[in-house]
Length: 195
Length: 195
Image (cartoon, rainbow over all chains, first blue to last red; front, side, top):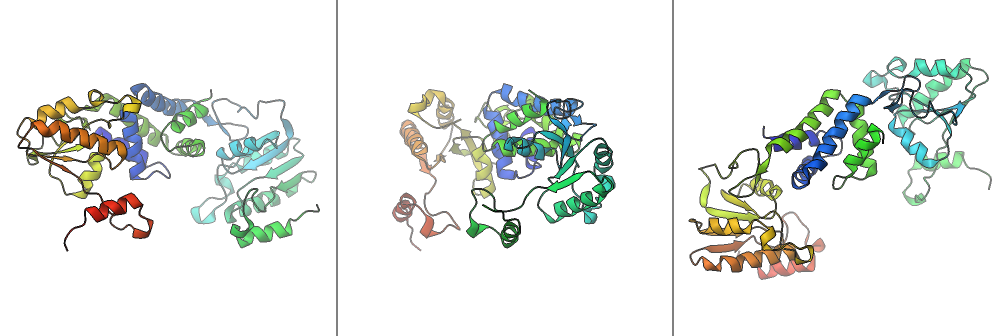
């Protein structure tokens, strides 16, 4: 296989990148400065060499422990549980959470053979035993995310002083009621608040 | 900058890839098998090391001359002029052309300082002098592509036996007349054919 075909193939294996886009990316690199391409391949190699799951929370980071676990200005008694490390960036962008994280590395999915043992749950329970006052469950608002949240809620019942909360569901800000699905609207009704 | 941030930044420099997509690609590689990431960075490095413009036609290829110029079963007297090497794949996919190619490496664009000297035109004129019977101009149906085609048409007038043609413009197959723009419909009228 030619070098060009090989690179189109590798780009095409990435999620959301079809053959046309893979071709466009490949020819973009070919037309551009070689240094730009070199920086991209070096950045991939660097991530492979440096990034590891944080032993504390499971976040992916070049540092051990990760930037959130080592930051003493974040509230150590508050823990936000997410499915993936990539969810942390979205929460950080909201600017509303100043505690620590715990990354499950997925969600419960019995059909795919993913049970609690396949997720970073045992370490979470150890951490909950260590002075945590609130666990905010921020798994996705999907069937599997809800099942995972319910499982964590039950598993946390052994810590009587622990407050367990779940991110609110409702209409997305800036969204249009007309285009919201029925389940979301039903959640928005049952979670309605006094004005 | 962290390794993760650096890779998100490099992905984000690619065309059509915004920050969200760059994050998704980065975490996809982090979640996947290290070998998959290694193959991507190796494919980029291989393209950098191997691929060069063909000295004959300007196509980007690991071989010199490129696969089309060295293929003796393609008609050497027919030449199809394209703006970019990436256009060749689209023409090959049509299966309707069995001649050779010439890659200009862009289009005339005086505002961007791109004149004939910035394009692979001198070599084209040398090739036209060497037994070519037809030059099919396949520059894009854009203002700049048309200007480039007109320039090549004039430049080729010094070869009296040479037939110069341009790809037909009209309604795209499978398209909807209702959504076609006026200029395309006008072209379709003036290029209409007997049934």
